[in-house]
Image (tube, rainbow, N blue to C red; front, side, top):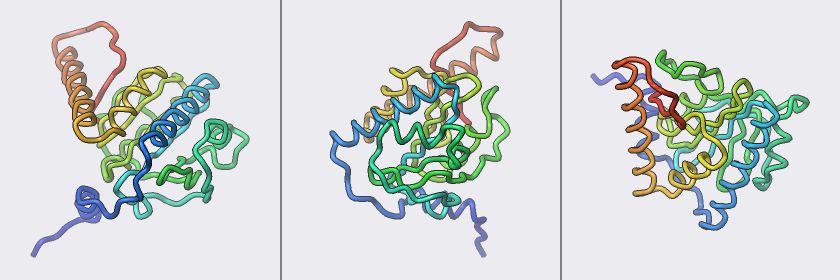
Length: 212
């Protein structure tokens, strides 16, 4: 008898993929990433926290607590407005599906890991949690530090500026060899930081990467 826990089943389904949305044209994908990056920068400057989830092949409907349906084009101004303190949806995540803003105010599963980088908050735990069980790409804006982070496959790249965010998004969303190179670079920086901690104090590094 083989016993699988619910989380194990979800991870297995995520690896196989439960469906592929109609492909988004390369130019549109580039523009989408730019709108998200601009929104993240704007929110960081305002010290407003945010959580953007870009769905790829793994359907997220069974992994998140659905929020309010938006179904709108991905535009910086709309993304910013959804996270401003006066918005009733600002506490949750915005989910982007098939190149459109699908929902806002969504609740994501939190990771149970205890080895998150120092200073990681609830939004970072949620970003890691959803990417542990899917192939989603998540962008986190920290209201405390104004730092931008990208999380993929439970791996977090932190302390990004606007240019760094665009570079990581471009490589990850390109998929294939570009994504593999990006993730290998992230893992390499993570390992270098771990080695530095074992050898003693080291200088500041940016961006910071860590296995969450």
